Image 1 (cartoon, rainbow, N blue to C red):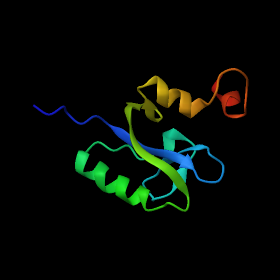
Image 2 (cartoon, helix red, strand yellow; image 1 turned 45 degrees about the vertical axis):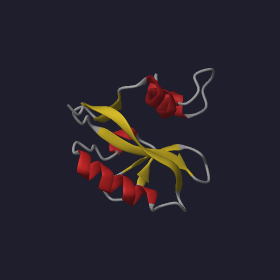
Image 3 (cartoon, rainbow, N blue to C red; image 1 turned 180 degrees about the vertical axis):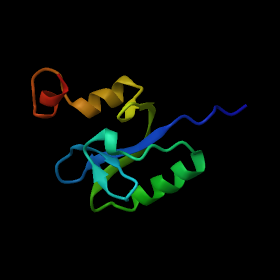
Image 4 (tube, rainbow, N blue to C red; image 1 turned 90 degrees about the horizontal axis):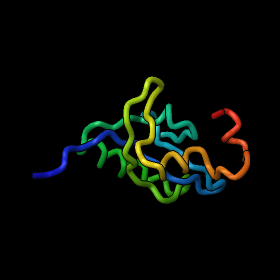
Length: 100
C-alpha cells in the first residue's frame, strides 16, 4: 500500500546568493517559508516541481520538502528543513535575529 501524500513545499537555493528559497503560488521565490505554496496533492506537487526546475537561471537544487500546516503558513516537520530555514546556530548571521 502506498504511503499517503503529506503536505509539501518546493525549496531550493538561490543561484547567486545561496540563500534557501521557497516556491510561491505566483511562480516566484521567497526567503520566507510562510509565503511558500503549500502543496497537498501529489500530482500537483510533481507539476509544480517541474515548473520550479525550469528556473535554472534563478535557483539550484530544487526539491520537495515535507511540512505541516501552521497558523501562519507552512512549517518544517524535519530538523534539516528547520536548520536550512534558520541557518547555522553558532552565532547570529542575520536570519536568526527575528526568530528569538
